Amino acid sequence: MKQLSPPLLWLRNGPEEVQSLVAGLDLVRTAAHEDASHAWLCMIANGTAHYLSTYAPTELLSRLYATRNELYGVVAPVGRLRTGTDGGLVLDGCWRFGSGSHRAAIMAMGCAPVAGRRTTVLVNRLLLEVTHPWEGPGLLATASHTLRANGVRVSPAEVVDMTDIPAGRPIGIYADPDLFLANMPGVTLGLTERLLALLGPGPAPGVWQATYAEAAARNTLARRGLAAMLHSFDTAARAGKLTLFSPALRQEFLLMLSAAFHIGLDAALALAQGCDSTDPEIRQELEQARVDIATMRPHGAMRPSRLVNPGASAPAGRPR
Image (cartoon, rainbow, N blue to C red; front, side, top):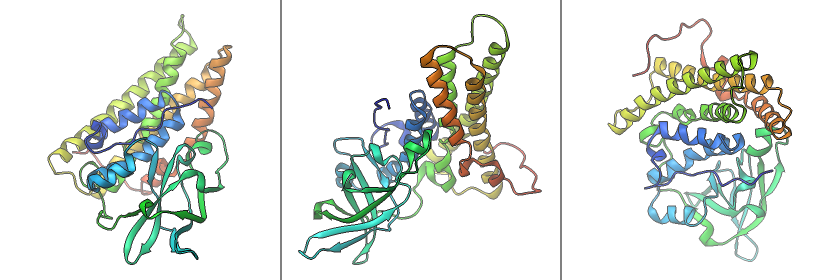
């Protein structure tokens, strides 16, 4: 597997992405130009980084992000921090969905409250056991694992008190919980852009040139439509007016999100299936793209059947 730079996390006083849904979409798209799995991890990591950069004190941010960009979020508080027989601290637990954990140096593992205080433990990734690696092709092989700690010793300095950090929804661009999905289509749109740049339109008119032109046009329209919608949300967030969605706006937002995701996916598939290059490197890239497409297509968050109530008419107009 080729070496990639760590997925970008969005920090206080850092990139614009921490305050912009449009910029976040572009960041994920750009990451997908290099590798779709890499982009998927960027998409997953943004919520925790934005949340912490909104609420966490400087001291905590410095501890989490001081040197290397390799921390992958705070997972569910299902661990147990206890006192060992020698009086030291010991961590036990099993956490699902440890996304990107094989690239992380440190994992922030949520624990059950200790003396009424919400607690997270910063753990060396190598001390955690992968009990369910979610083995499979493409994204499934790189994104998620089930992690277990069995009697892992930790120092008091590795225990973080999260009590004073709000447990509710962050302010700003994530005022509605479904906005955490806003940059997910960036993975498929960026994958298509990578294939367009890799393959080119060809030297002469024909079936391939038509396939290429249609994929480019569909992907561009989907990206621009999604970016325009997210720009309106960015504007509302900067004015302090972005709040929980109404049912009609939520439905339209999710429909547009799912449409952009699947348009990008279908465009990438058309390119991957339509190209008959004999170049071995290009053939390898196309095979990897086909695998990534197959593993992204069933993702539940973007499944159209989840988004529309049977028999319900689609709301008119664009979100404002």
